[in-house]
Image (cartoon, rainbow, N blue to C red; front, side, top):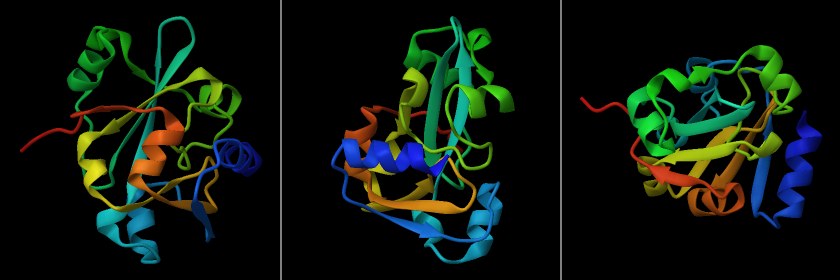
Length: 155
């Protein structure tokens, strides 16, 4: 799966750094690794919507996604938004569950929570469970052509 992200990063002329490590499948495991500042960890959730389209939502690792806000951002009803299956993640998005990154693979729409913009350098998935991407938040937004929106739960 790494070759997809490496090719994408090269094609978009991104400035970044890749970190190899033991397998990570959850944000909690990423925090436990202690190789990266917890405040800069970004997780990415994969959703499927109508017509075999996908949405990847990136937010700070400690934040929870607000599905109603995500649906509103996409101008769809909450009922149209569902978690992508493992087969969809591996087959259509060319990533592994637990390692999903905010990249527009398979024509996916990328939504990045507005709070991520305040993090100078973020650490996020690459599509693999064994590598983490270190990249400037603005650079990530640029290369992913992301929609910026408030999609984290408040309170």
